Image (cartoon, rainbow, N blue to C red; front, side):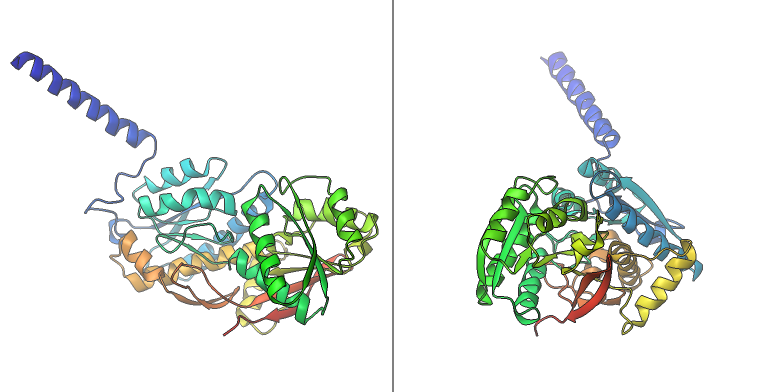
Length: 394
């Protein structure tokens, strides 16, 4: 009996050792809940991880965010860093977002995560931020369904807020009466913004004459839905898709079937791909977080000058600005948390943070999301131009 018992104990010990080994190899975080979790004072540098979309339809967003991260890191390092320490950026693609996040979380020197980029990948990662007790800031993931307020925060406003603002703009600025909506049911970003718009439009007294949808947010054919919008007599079409679908497909197809009313979208229109005549894009508008034409915010102009100098004269877009602000949010939190701060201390410093940046002034609410002013851009001669700023309701 003793031999059998000893053998079983030995087997259990081997199994446990193998489990620990596999956990370490898979990138699981072994430090998240331990008492000796990493502190800033443990390392000579401060490491931020990033998980961004670097391939596929939304690749331009991820690339723009990374350029914003890099600019902010270079500025901070040039100014002496944080507590005299330089910042290092560890970047990963979100093709397998959960694995990428867990891998970074398992690296003891990583004190925070920037990203992911889009709502679908951020939604998958949100629970992991809490499980790993790793503070994370998503620059542009706007979906309401994402669980925030624990260890995950955002720099951007939420979908519902963006849809509400679009309805308010249609009613009060454009003064239209009949509106329609087209969104992708298979995408949380597209459907979330679209449904929020419908609810807000009805509350604003607008008549929703058509509510159409596609199976996904990256289809290439929308003519049948757009014909119904046209037949319903809509003066305004809200089509919350990404630039890669709105530019080459939705807008040209709407014009080709005779729809000449307004077309409006959310921040996913940033980087709109124009095909054919630029005149097709007249009366196209979208809401966003930042405009290079905003002369009222001195930080905007300083940011643009700095970015152009570092990027051969290129102009930064909204996602670059959101990425840039996200790094500075971490800087503010780290400085508030102190030179001996842990991940939990940094998370506490971010919670309820008031911040003033390139994408506006805001205070994070209890759910970790900002409610801030919204920029409306209008396409003129194929280029987005500043139309107005809509302030949040007080």
